[in-house]
Image: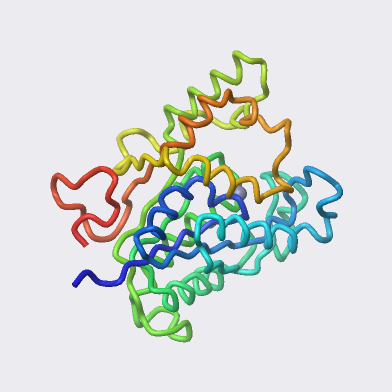
Length: 279
Ligand SMILES: [Zn+2]
């Protein structure tokens, strides 16, 4: 009998999960338990339309947006670490003592360990070390999820956080570095400011040689779009990616890339879209 499988995707803000919604939905379709862990409620994100939220209500509004976006792909289990959005690098929000980046590492890791031990995921998924585009909370959730992956199965670590449970594999999910460069070039040709303009393109996303899994989900592109559109406060018509022609957008959203970074090694010849191969 195949043991019960579960997946926990660990992110920093509501809408960060959008890079992996195809794979998460496929797991739901296969009868697995799927959860999303979110460190903050994205309290200092955009407000696309002032009718939707104020700076004071944005966190509560974005919590509901994430719950609805998750429900669209069939995910009911959403966990919050209850930290505050740290804002973009260099913003005054970085100094807020409630900000995720200012959490004592042991406390933040302990909260992730407690959720892992309760939910018992086979796979953990989080950002790669570049955080996609370098947001300080993205870097923090990658670092602390990685530490929690190694600590959760160790009875000597965080004994107050529940019975030890070791997930089998840790994956980093990101856009491939080559695709980021293609997108940046396309936007530059169109004269559209790139979201990647402040970052070194050679440090962003997953380098091709690290990608262990490419998951094609063209059949879920429309569902993924409906999930994304639940994040209404973040949907600015001026967002750079909204300038992509429909065909390019669908191609971009049809592929998700993952890198196995820790846990049970893959069997030789494992299919490139099976993150559970050999388990
Ligand atoms: Zn984010």
